[in-house]
Image (cartoon, rainbow, N blue to C red; front, side, top):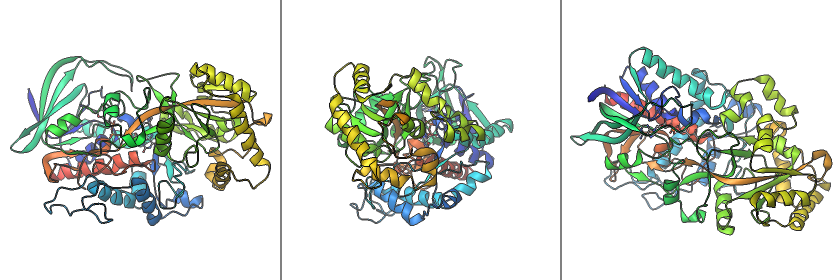
Length: 572
Ligand SMILES: Cc1cc2nc3c(=O)[nH]c(=O)nc-3n(C[C@H](O)[C@H](O)[C@H](O)COP(=O)(O)OP(=O)(O)OC[C@H]3O[C@@H](n4cnc5c(N)ncnc54)[C@H](O)[C@@H]3O)c2cc1C
């Protein structure tokens, strides 16, 4: 059976919801299809922490953080490290659109990046406020960088938390889509798994779907893939917003780059099973060019979730800066591989220096555990997700927040002890091998503690912790006052086994600034648009090699909006 609408949107994650909301505003008839049941809209964004990259915001200014477009652009370029520009890497923009030469893989990502950073320094906050999105007043300092002014990382705190976390960000766009359903403009087509893009006359004219058996699972739980039928939906345009590949470990391994060392044997999964990359082959078959597939953003601070929702469910710790970071054999990681500084640098260091082991360790005090171990995810932050001021204030006064304590009580990765020797016995018991030597860890902890006897000291990490405490946000809820880990008032000692957690896909469909999918020659594939993670958050790689964090949700908003507007215009 073939049906016809103005536009098909594949995937109601954040990018798909934003695109659909734009299409509804323009009066277009949309089929919004998902392989999952449509009771649960919002995809990954619903589970997210809701962290947003903004530049020179009122929240920053209130905390006396002086940010600017120039500084943010310097940080973005230093992190991206674009080296696949069509002009051979000169700082220009690569070939101009339509000049006949195929674009470099980074050409459009770089253009999107400039537009995005300008948006984050300009209209973005007001646009979100207009839709009722509010921000938590304390700005976080994520991805503090590689220790160089023009290299990777945020020079200042820029990680703005949505009040209500991921669900709070999804809410206004879901509302607009459900209003579209009520107005008869949007059909929500759950259990439709797109397996191909239909083409005709050189253009994409619809989608081919398998109908999956009804399976009313809870949000995020893997659903059945039993096929009960097929359908084609015809449309004037197709917008693909199908997300990344983080749950498809086969694809992650296939495209894992050599520069990160050998891939780990075991990882935990930071995304639901629907983040499976199943649209990539159909997109390629329809002529879209996939670029930068070797660029991914995985974390090194993953824990096994004690209450898993999806297969292999892992939770990421967003760490404050104080923990000692040890590799699997108990050696301390060198600067700048400090907690919260350089995600991929640390991953590459660990994979290259200890490839035979997949894990590393944080060693700290209970005070650090309580103050510095934020857990990423809406369900791990019930105070912010539930918008409870009273509970949020509890963060300042509480010993250890309940979600973190649950990992101590029920998790597979946390051990506590009164002495270093006992701690190391428990660390080795956890891995089932005598990998860590107690005398070596005792030496490290005692040496670190001695550095804290006065305000001087030559330990880089201690100096950076002191610097972090100059920021009000850090002082309030992110960075514990410097203290000796062996001081019993801050005890017991804590060790946390950290695993590699798969999360974001940085490459994808190359798109122009209207989110039109481009072919290998750089020409738009008529009728085809891509946005959000499947498009590398813009251009097939807005981040280049590395992210400044909080940039993924924003990339979905920005590219989803562009795709919705352009597809609406094209189907006038
Ligand atoms: C726990 C967690 C915390 C995060 N925290 C942050 C944060 O604080 N800040 C930040 O910027 N980012 C964060 N992220 C990342 C961010 O949430 C995602 O990158 C973003 O939401 C991706 O949105 P999307 O719309 O591109 O795709 P998705 O949300 O993955 O949605 C894709 C949709 O497409 C559907 N689909 C896929 N293939 C098919 C097919 N073949 N047929 C039909 N349907 C299909 C899927 O079922 C899904 O509904 C976090 C992610 C997670 C999981």
